[in-house]
Amino acid sequence: MKSSSLRIGAALVFCCGLVSSTGCVKKSEYDALQADYNAALAKQGKLAEVVTEQDAELSALKADFDKLAEIFAEELENQELELELLVDGIEVAIPSDLMYASGSATATVGSDGLEFAKRLAKFLADTDYFVSVVGHTDSQQPSAALAKKYPTNWELAAARAANATKYLVSHGVDPTSVVASSRGEFAPVASNDTAEGRAQNRRIQIILRDLP
Image (tube, rainbow, N blue to C red; front, side, top):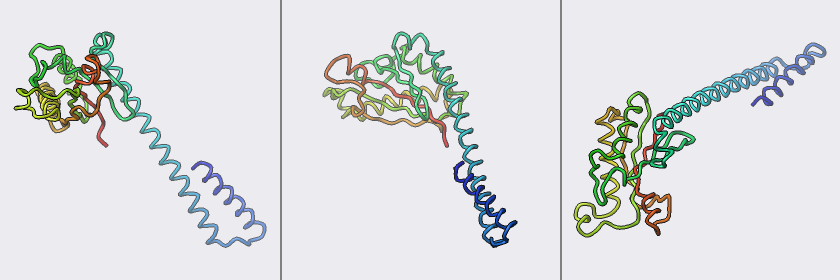
């Protein structure tokens, strides 16, 4: 964009020289070049504004990420939850095992997972983030008894996400700025071939993003 405006500017200077020395450049041609030059400068100014605005947004996002890193400093050090800075938001992942008993979608009272969610809700209550709460499971299918209530992992993950969402809302998160969804077993972060991998896949993923 800068080089384009420079080229047009140079053309204007050249044309001005021709006008003064020979008078051979039509006024309409000069006016057209002047209009193009002004348009290029305007676009360059708008681009600079966009870059400045994006820089400010990224700085604010990084500041909130640092706040969350401080809030969950001990848990992050002990690898009890995960925190990641995204290009357009922040992701918090709470292991389901820290919030729910095996095969249950009802959070265990007094669990570490609920304590984490409570602290997160307190932080979110003072922000304008749109919050996506996503439930994930491992690849093991619900037992016969459990399947009566949750036929597949889609339903189990959805119920866990919904209950986590309701807990956040009950602790101050704006209900119009949060949505619950399920990925079931279909977005693993580790292999389901080991107990450790399956534990990593069972999680509540909470993504914070600014609305446009």
